[in-house]
Length: 161
Image 1 (tube, helix red, strand yellow):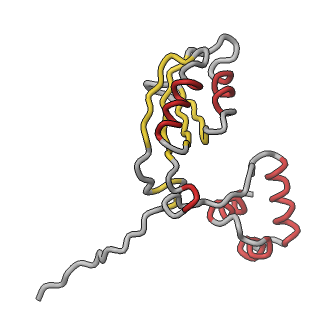
Image 2 (cartoon, one colour):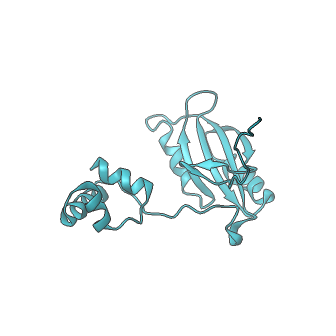
Image 3 (tube, helix red, strand yellow):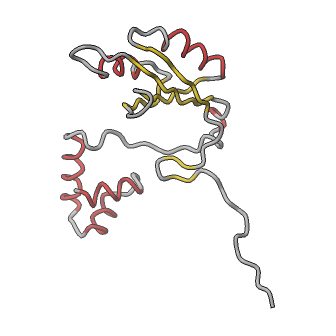
Protein backbone atom coordinates (compact mmCIF):
# COMPACT_ATOMS: atom_id res chain seq x y z
CA UNK A 1 0.00 0.00 0.00
CA UNK A 2 2.74 2.46 0.94
CA UNK A 3 4.42 1.96 -2.45
CA UNK A 4 1.23 2.95 -4.24
CA UNK A 5 0.71 5.95 -1.96
CA UNK A 6 4.27 7.15 -2.58
CA UNK A 7 3.78 6.93 -6.33
CA UNK A 8 0.46 8.81 -6.13
CA UNK A 9 2.02 11.51 -3.93
CA UNK A 10 4.64 12.08 -6.62
CA UNK A 11 2.23 11.94 -9.56
CA UNK A 12 -1.48 11.25 -9.13
CA UNK A 13 -1.84 10.97 -12.91
CA UNK A 14 0.16 7.76 -13.15
CA UNK A 15 -1.84 5.06 -14.87
CA UNK A 16 -2.67 1.81 -13.12
CA UNK A 17 -0.59 0.07 -15.77
CA UNK A 18 2.47 2.20 -14.97
CA UNK A 19 2.05 1.73 -11.21
CA UNK A 20 1.74 -2.02 -11.70
CA UNK A 21 4.98 -2.09 -13.68
CA UNK A 22 6.78 0.10 -11.14
CA UNK A 23 5.67 -1.99 -8.14
CA UNK A 24 5.81 -5.41 -9.85
CA UNK A 25 2.14 -5.98 -9.02
CA UNK A 26 -0.70 -6.85 -11.36
CA UNK A 27 -3.04 -4.11 -12.56
CA UNK A 28 -5.87 -5.79 -10.61
CA UNK A 29 -3.79 -5.69 -7.42
CA UNK A 30 -3.06 -1.99 -7.91
CA UNK A 31 -6.76 -1.26 -8.57
CA UNK A 32 -7.74 -3.20 -5.44
CA UNK A 33 -5.20 -1.33 -3.30
CA UNK A 34 -6.36 2.04 -4.63
CA UNK A 35 -10.01 1.13 -4.06
CA UNK A 36 -9.26 0.06 -0.49
CA UNK A 37 -7.32 3.27 0.20
CA UNK A 38 -10.24 5.32 -1.11
CA UNK A 39 -12.84 3.37 0.89
CA UNK A 40 -10.81 3.68 4.11
CA UNK A 41 -10.50 7.43 3.61
CA UNK A 42 -6.72 7.32 3.21
CA UNK A 43 -7.04 8.83 -0.28
CA UNK A 44 -9.53 11.67 -0.03
CA UNK A 45 -9.12 13.39 -3.37
CA UNK A 46 -7.02 13.56 -6.52
CA UNK A 47 -6.13 17.15 -7.39
CA UNK A 48 -3.90 19.27 -9.58
CA UNK A 49 -1.36 21.60 -7.98
CA UNK A 50 -1.66 24.96 -9.72
CA UNK A 51 0.98 27.69 -9.61
CA UNK A 52 -0.93 30.73 -8.29
CA UNK A 53 1.42 33.13 -10.11
CA UNK A 54 0.51 31.61 -13.47
CA UNK A 55 -3.21 31.05 -12.88
CA UNK A 56 -4.50 34.09 -14.78
CA UNK A 57 -8.09 33.72 -13.56
CA UNK A 58 -7.08 33.77 -9.89
CA UNK A 59 -3.77 35.67 -10.02
CA UNK A 60 -5.06 38.67 -8.04
CA UNK A 61 -6.61 36.63 -5.22
CA UNK A 62 -5.31 37.33 -1.73
CA UNK A 63 -4.20 34.52 0.56
CA UNK A 64 -3.85 34.98 4.31
CA UNK A 65 -2.83 32.94 7.32
CA UNK A 66 -4.87 33.70 10.41
CA UNK A 67 -3.77 32.67 13.88
CA UNK A 68 -6.70 32.31 16.26
CA UNK A 69 -6.88 31.99 20.02
CA UNK A 70 -10.13 30.34 21.10
CA UNK A 71 -11.89 29.25 24.24
CA UNK A 72 -12.40 25.48 23.86
CA UNK A 73 -15.93 24.27 24.49
CA UNK A 74 -16.69 21.88 27.31
CA UNK A 75 -16.97 18.28 26.03
CA UNK A 76 -16.07 19.34 22.46
CA UNK A 77 -12.68 21.01 22.93
CA UNK A 78 -11.49 22.74 19.78
CA UNK A 79 -13.46 20.53 17.39
CA UNK A 80 -16.73 22.47 17.54
CA UNK A 81 -15.16 25.84 16.71
CA UNK A 82 -12.93 24.27 14.03
CA UNK A 83 -16.05 22.71 12.48
CA UNK A 84 -17.76 26.10 12.26
CA UNK A 85 -14.67 27.71 10.76
CA UNK A 86 -13.86 25.14 8.06
CA UNK A 87 -17.39 25.38 6.66
CA UNK A 88 -16.81 28.94 5.41
CA UNK A 89 -16.10 28.87 1.65
CA UNK A 90 -13.14 31.26 2.03
CA UNK A 91 -11.32 28.82 4.31
CA UNK A 92 -8.81 26.57 2.53
CA UNK A 93 -7.16 24.90 5.55
CA UNK A 94 -7.62 24.63 9.32
CA UNK A 95 -4.97 23.32 11.73
CA UNK A 96 -4.98 22.78 15.50
CA UNK A 97 -1.64 24.14 16.72
CA UNK A 98 0.56 24.02 19.77
CA UNK A 99 2.22 27.17 21.05
CA UNK A 100 0.96 30.74 21.28
CA UNK A 101 -2.32 30.25 19.41
CA UNK A 102 -4.83 27.44 18.97
CA UNK A 103 -5.97 27.36 15.35
CA UNK A 104 -4.24 28.36 12.14
CA UNK A 105 -6.39 28.88 9.10
CA UNK A 106 -5.53 29.66 5.51
CA UNK A 107 -8.12 31.72 3.66
CA UNK A 108 -8.49 33.18 0.20
CA UNK A 109 -10.30 36.33 -0.84
CA UNK A 110 -10.71 38.44 -3.96
CA UNK A 111 -8.88 41.37 -2.34
CA UNK A 112 -7.59 42.72 0.99
CA UNK A 113 -11.00 44.17 1.88
CA UNK A 114 -12.69 40.78 1.44
CA UNK A 115 -10.19 39.18 3.81
CA UNK A 116 -10.54 41.99 6.34
CA UNK A 117 -14.34 41.76 6.25
CA UNK A 118 -14.22 37.99 6.66
CA UNK A 119 -12.01 38.31 9.72
CA UNK A 120 -13.97 41.15 11.35
CA UNK A 121 -17.52 40.08 10.49
CA UNK A 122 -17.41 36.28 10.32
CA UNK A 123 -14.41 35.00 12.23
CA UNK A 124 -13.91 37.40 15.13
CA UNK A 125 -17.63 37.35 15.95
CA UNK A 126 -17.78 33.56 16.45
CA UNK A 127 -18.51 32.52 20.02
CA UNK A 128 -15.30 31.27 21.58
CA UNK A 129 -12.90 33.30 19.41
CA UNK A 130 -10.72 35.38 21.74
CA UNK A 131 -8.29 36.93 19.25
CA UNK A 132 -7.07 36.78 15.67
CA UNK A 133 -3.81 37.71 13.98
CA UNK A 134 -3.74 37.97 10.19
CA UNK A 135 -0.65 37.55 8.02
CA UNK A 136 -0.87 37.98 4.24
CA UNK A 137 0.99 35.68 1.87
CA UNK A 138 3.17 37.82 -0.38
CA UNK A 139 4.77 35.08 -2.47
CA UNK A 140 4.80 31.29 -2.45
CA UNK A 141 8.18 29.69 -3.01
CA UNK A 142 7.41 26.08 -2.08
CA UNK A 143 4.29 24.30 -0.91
CA UNK A 144 3.52 20.61 -0.46
CA UNK A 145 6.97 19.66 -1.81
CA UNK A 146 6.38 21.66 -5.01
CA UNK A 147 8.75 24.51 -5.85
CA UNK A 148 6.87 27.37 -7.50
CA UNK A 149 9.74 29.66 -8.47
CA UNK A 150 11.69 29.18 -11.65
CA UNK A 151 15.37 29.73 -11.00
CA UNK A 152 17.08 30.57 -14.26
CA UNK A 153 20.29 31.93 -12.76
CA UNK A 154 23.53 30.27 -13.74
CA UNK A 155 24.84 28.75 -10.49
CA UNK A 156 28.11 27.38 -11.92
CA UNK A 157 31.28 28.41 -10.20
CA UNK A 158 33.71 30.46 -12.23
CA UNK A 159 37.01 28.85 -13.12
CA UNK A 160 40.16 30.87 -12.60
CA UNK A 161 43.48 30.01 -14.21
